[in-house]
Structures are given as structure tokens and as C-alpha cells.
Length: 574
Ligand code: FES
Ligand code: MG
Image 1 (cartoon, rainbow, N blue to C red):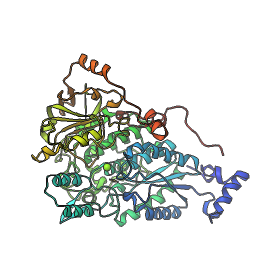
Image 2: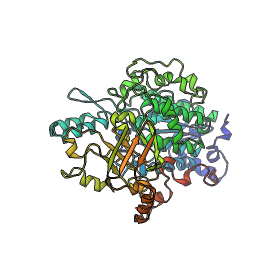
Image 3: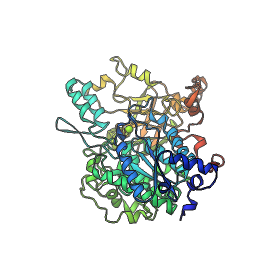
Image 4: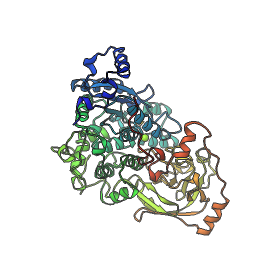
């Protein structure tokens, strides 16, 4: 238990010396007095609101609800703005900046008089970034998920973020949707604040934070526009103050069994492929040894039971909440969970799950009536991806789960865009499309380009899925037989760089294999003939990124941010 004297912030505010005077007088400059801070935990509220972050548009108000809770519980709230990482606007990809937000978070905590933090995020990369940074900083931390937006609506149809954009775009390319109808879709697909409401990366990562025990129980499922979300924010503000007194740090919550629980929940949710990268990175920050193998083991035994698109056929996150949300899903999943792990409530997961139940068994299925018998992700290995690659089998056409086809290679994203719709492109539905040099270094930042568009001439023939292989990622709202995260990536000379048009490639998801049918000596010859690409950046953040970014199977963290890289930073001198 902490006492007022042992608070971290007391080092700033308590001493009767010249530095202490400086800290107190400058807090008084803002109109606060000793009653506001003396002996109280200082709670940092790290807010990823900005004018160009639609998923967090409500955080400008919600932060006031967090403050209300902190004040009610006897804490001193301080809002600290951080990088907002809006998925739709940050180019080339938010993934280039996930680690920057993680550093932003860690250093904001370390350099300020902060005893505990509330982390406000939700849009894709913000969840792992905030949690990675807070994990490394080590003070008590609790996560506020932005909540999913309401269901989309257009001409009486329910629209899902991302998934329906891709689907209707293909229909428009096939000439079946008018420009006026398209405008209706633009206005109807995102009609409230909150993050994407399909089971994309945002819904996946916030559910993972919830399953890890880093949010109030069930917080991740509450729609952003629901009044319960406001109450959850105030309750989170109250809870963090007690967490400071209890010294309930992330290290006591984020253990190996907690990460395994999170992986089980991710599999059952029909999670985004991005989960695999973020969970590995976050676990490494927590000093937990979690690898692709843990995902592979879980995927063999845990079925997808959340009937939420794109793995499911019909429902969205709003329906998932009404069906009982992630607590209900975890109550179904009890046989696969370790219920003794600690959570931010100061109680175990098992205690938090008491009373949780499913209210709609079509939305949240039982283990013996899943929507897909195995987990959401499968990890494939072979000579084309010695360190692994990832596919989401439930979102692919079944016939492609075992497939052999000839390669059609694109060396870059611009080259693919330029060629893919040519009427004379030599391609059939059985071809394997390859997009390379789009990995962590090549992209740079591993953009979500892995759902390579179906060539226009095949779209017109009614083709809607093909086997596609890349070292990129794809949006969690995407679908199709897309094989992603090929490691090592092409840009640094991984085998993907050596594929030539017409080479045969076999994929067998049941066996978890991927094979390039080219002899080893021929691959060695191609490798020695390959030109080393130019560095992507010669200055700035990108320069640092390319020197320190790790490959996808390692979680794409910077090497120097990982726990165990050198001596811990420790507390600042004051
Ligand atoms: Fe923010 Fe999808 S754009 S979660
Ligand atoms: Mg996304």
C-alpha cells in the first residue's frame, strides 16, 4: 500500500526546498491550491483526442467524466495530450507511428509527477501503443476504450466499417452502384463517434485489453454513444485513484497467463490479423515470453464464437454489446481461461465474470456451436516464410485453404496499382497475387495493403476472392484468402524477394504450410543476383525507424524499447 509520503508525485510537490517551491508555485499559477494536490495521487489522463481523429471525437467530453471520477475519489487529474494516430488520415500508415505513441506515453509518464494513468484510446494502433508505453513506465494504469460506433445505415441496410466499403466498392467497380448511391454509403457507414464497429483491429485490441484485465470489466464492448460509456469513464477515474494506493501496477496484471487469456479471447472473437503483432510487442514489454507459437496453439483449440463481421456473417459490435459483450463471451470461454489472474479491479478475472451471461446465442455462440471450428488466425511456415506468416481462414473462400497456383508478382504498391486493372493483365482466378517490399522496412511501416484488389477483368467475371501473399498487413475489417506478415520481409532479402512470375506456390492451411516450388540452388542464385534496395529514409524519424524496427514475428517494436535492452531508465533527478 502507498502512503501520501511515498507517492511518486510527492518528490515534486512535498519537499520544502527551492525545487518544491517551483513546482507548487507553478501549480498555483493555474489556480490550484494545496487542497487540490497535497497528499493526493496525481492522475495523468493520456488523451489521444485531436481534431483529425473521428474515432475519438467524444474524448473531448469524456475526459471531463474521467476528471469527475478522479476528483470524487480524492485524486488530482492532469490531462496530457498524446499523438492521436487516426487510422484513416495518417500516411503511409499509423503502424509507422505506433512505437512513437508508445514512446510518447512512456516518457510523458516518466518525466511528469504522475502516480497513475488513465489511457484514452481505441482507434487501431492507439490501444497497443498506449499500453506498451504504460507497461514500460510501470505506474498503475487503466485503459479507457473509445467504444465502437453505432451500426452503419444506408437504404435500410446495415453497414459495417471497412468490410462494406470494400464490398460495395467492388460492386461499384462492377457497375452495380450509382454515384448517388455511393454518396449515401459515404454518409451512412460512419454515423456516430467511436471506432470501427466490425471486428477490426480496434474492436480486437480493446477486447484484448479488457481480457488482459487492463480495463474495467466489459468496458470494451460499450458503444461510444451509449450513456453507459460516460459512466464507465467516471468509474475508471475513481478506480485509478484506488489503484495508486494499492500500488496495482501493470506488472501485477500483465502476466503470461493473462496474455494467454487475451489470445484465447482474440481467437474466439474472430480477431484481426494485426492482433498477433501487437500482442507479441506488448507481452515483450511486460517481460512475458509470448510468440507466434502461442497463437498457433490457441488457434487449434479455440473456435470463433463471436458472430461479428467480417468472420461472422451478420452482426456488428452494437449487437455484440446487447448480447452481453466480452464478459459474456469470456463466460462461454471459461474452460480455456485462467480465472485466477489479477485485474485492474483488484479482483480476479473469475470474480469479474460472476453473473456474466449471454443474452443472444446467435451473436455469441456456445463452444459447441461455433461459427468457425478453429481460431481466427492460422500461422503458416515454409520456405517462402521461414519465420512465419498469417492468414484469417474464417474470412477466406474455403477452396483457397488448400491451393496451388502460379505467382503474379508486384514489386511495389504503386506498381500494383498501375497494373492491376489492365485489361491485358495475364491473370486467372487461380493465380497467386504477390505484393512485396511492403513490410516493416519496405512499406515502410507495413501498411494495410495486404488485401490486394482483385484485378478488374476478374471482378467483371464475378471473381471476389483469390490467394494473395504479401509482407504487408491488412485491415482487420478486410477479408479474403490474404496471407500476410511474411517474415523475413522482401525488402531485407527474405525469400519473398526471390519469387518470379509463373513460380508455383502451394498453401495448405490445415497443415499450416506455405511452399515455393523452386529448388534451393536456384533460390541461392536469385539471391546473389538481387540488388540491395536503397534505404527508405536518410534523416529523421524514418531513419531511426529503419535502423531499429523488428520483423513482424517479433512484434515490430523498436529493439531499444524492449524490456531488457540495457539498464532501466529509472526515475528522473529532480
Ligand atoms: Fe479508427 Fe477504424 S478508423 S478504428
Ligand atoms: Mg483498421
